[in-house]
Length: 427
Figure 1 (tube, rainbow, N blue to C red):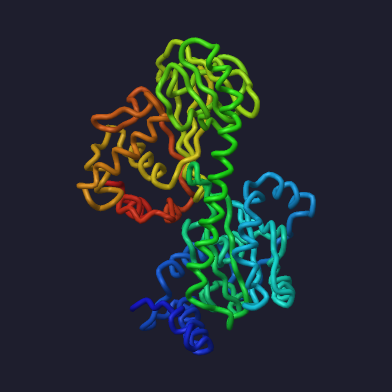
Figure 2 (figure 1 turned 135 degrees about the vertical axis):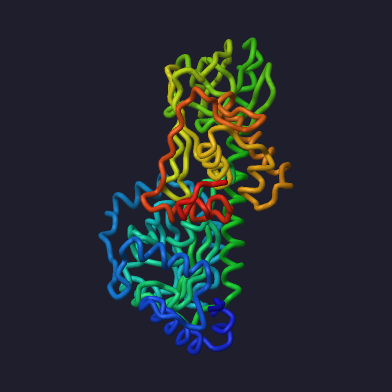
């Protein structure tokens, strides 16, 4: 059974493509075999949605957030800073193309929705409105929730939507990630009636999302420059090893020690003496919009230390460390989540070649693995040993997995992760 990208056919004959996709969807929902199958990204989404219990024949409208809750989320998300970029790139042709632009946060909640007035009214009937929950497990395969799961641009055309009422719709979404650490901030989506579909929309929406990320990077660098201007005179007066970091631990300036882009801070950070993984026992003092970190004598954090690797939520994976000296947590990039999962499974350790084979299917890609492990040591410090790479033997490590093993790191194509989804131990 061969998969088919119906977007190419839709560019020539939208009605025919929609009919053929409808047949594929009906057969898949009935469990019948056909000579055609949905694209892998769609087929995999349908499997996840089935396990979530979404009814393909019923609208899954949920109670939207109140206006106050929407405003609170708008004020808290970094996406508010890039709305001008998104509007300029996507709304400029919305009326002509009969599109709407939708911006959702990392939870799949619709925060902003603008565009063609008649399409907005159609979206209202689908419950595609500010405050609505558009996660994949709530409303099925779509250009917001599915993008948030797989972490890459996706176009969902016609009957590629799981819920029948959405099959007269076309959605194209792209993730917007934090350029500092790869964390998902939200999804920007362009949607409209079936006949507005065009294959080039994927590249268009993705390019605008990349522009938004570039703008966030500029804003971050500018904020560090402002903090550096305040912190540099302070560092000139203090002795020993010290750094000025922003509220998230990103480094603005250092003295007496090598520069590192980020220093993992306790969660939440507070003034006083704290153990930091890369520096040992430190003194934290508030400074402008950040912290003055003064390093003292290093101590060994491994005694009575617990590491919790949380992989239960896609795109929100994290590692948390708790010890007698305090607690802290770190958001994980998709690659770091894969690598730490493998080290948690193999407590005796893995070589760079082992990890390269398990993540990339190529044991020769050791340079890439070593670079990623070096980045992780910046926040794990002595908790990540090498030769081979492993967690210390006397450190408790717990992994929080999704309820269904098939939902393990759904964005990942690593051979070992695919085996983990079937319940097979990584090897």
